[in-house]
Length: 307
Image (tube, rainbow, N blue to C red; front, side, top):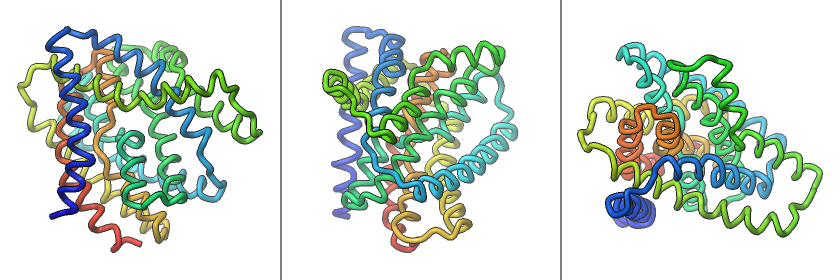
């Protein structure tokens, strides 16, 4: 019970406070959600990805194992999601919104602190989470954009949209600079860190603003299905892939934990930016953020039995 309360006070309450501040700011000042969304997409997210990847220490062996795991996991959860979308017969933008709410998860501003709390600063598990974060930051800016635009745009228009997103360029740039040990000039490094440190606050405030302006007529069936597939089936599929690959120890535990985190704020940002089911996306993120208190706690409790 003490551990349960600790997780609640240190992981749930702080995020809820930030979201509530965003909602209150919308109610008081009617903040422009589109402006906040663009700040997240074009300023804060690219800086966060660059800084985290540039400063991480990833070996080739770990990189290969984690990428293989992620490829298998992502394929499995995507197939499951596609079957679910077809069974439920979703139409138009709802198909893309549901896909994004399940396959994109909060691998940065929630999963990294969670990883370090559970594994007490372990460098190996942090490296594992950094690779997952890298892939999860790349996908919303490519596949995620496609998902929310496929029903209303051509491939050419979608590719043009993706090409203008800076995050996809930050990933190779960070790896190249780190590989050749090229230092980032101090006048650029300092503002990059300031901006990266502001990502979590800005993203949560943006979610709060979106929640503050939405109609609170919850689509419980769709939202709860999304949360079940993300929070329950996600770690189960991750566990299956870990066993398939024969992975053990803290690396296997870190990979399963990385699959258990709630829906990414990126799904809301994509929904707002491209006007595609923003209310469902906000509700899915909000509810998964609340329900993770129970599901993530259970996964953490079961981790010693994995490796």
